[in-house]
Image 1 (cartoon, helix red, strand yellow):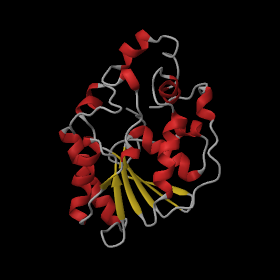
Image 2: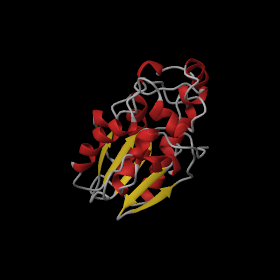
Image 3: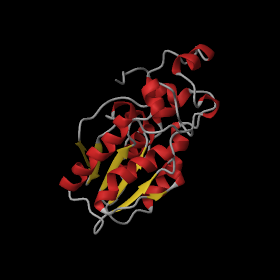
Length: 216
């Protein structure tokens, strides 16, 4: 679970007013082999586990119950394999195909992608005690949360109909901050999890499924 701590200063970027957007269904990909092992992925990839595939399929029923259909909705996805595979498993029964958008790729971790958190902390003890959200923002060579927000915002502004967005843990939180007009620091307090859908409409967020707290 996420814990509260003194936020790193870059996380206090103010994003302004909430965006005026159609309803969104924001989804994180299912569990991957590296998620299960505790290895950081970022721009790299690993396959969905059996649990991850089950999570994707289970979200189909949540979409159907919430009225998502090919007739009325669009879908976009991160181009990374774990998101593309989740989108296909979840949306194919609905007749929806997600369009890849490179701007939805996961937060870039620079030279730390593919490593374990303990190994990174050993190399960078100055950030080891930060809370997870602040740790990602302070990680040397990483993209930075403000830079991530800057690449995600144009993708949101282009949406003109109810849309399913399949992406990643950090991306999901920053997307919700952007849509709701929250400071990026608030991303630390937003729920996450795999196998859960966040519907954002008219300034309200509804979790479909069981929220969790992991970021990786």
